[in-house]
Length: 202
Image (cartoon, rainbow, N blue to C red; front, side, top):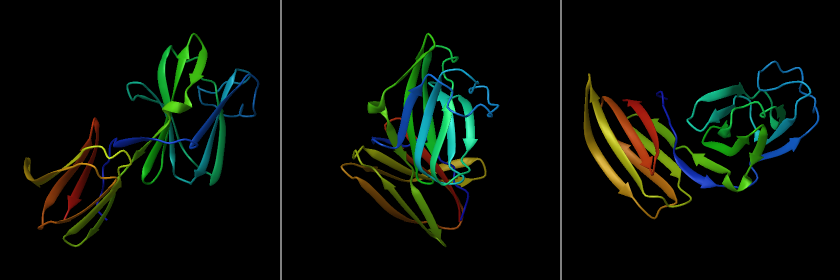
């Protein structure tokens, strides 16, 4: 399997992925030395269902800057307490990256008070890519049927040439097969302001 580089993709509102509750007392995570967790401070309890070892948990600000990052080391249920009250006023979000999806839920900090709106919880789906010799299979969930554009570029040294483009509409499940001659390629899958970039070495 060739290396794959992916960025943000299609968003889909989904309930029940991340459950967050605010606690005003210590909830047993004082041993964590991360600066976002402080003994005795008010805690935000983050509970993640159906996690796997290697899933990546991050806390980001509204500009996408990572403030906290952790590779999950447990299977099933994950629980951890965070003191978010010391963050500057602004918008933030938790993000759990899995194999084929990214679950996120935003929160705000206003004058040391944390506010969480589960109605804004969403899931970003990644494309699944499989390469067999000169054939490249791409599938991706698109629950909102967002207009999606696929561009295939050939890469020759520093020159990039568009070889194929397609606009997909009114489709909740994208399924494509590309037959590529020997060479290097870049495939872009974009919808709204979200984009995946996949590099293929054939």
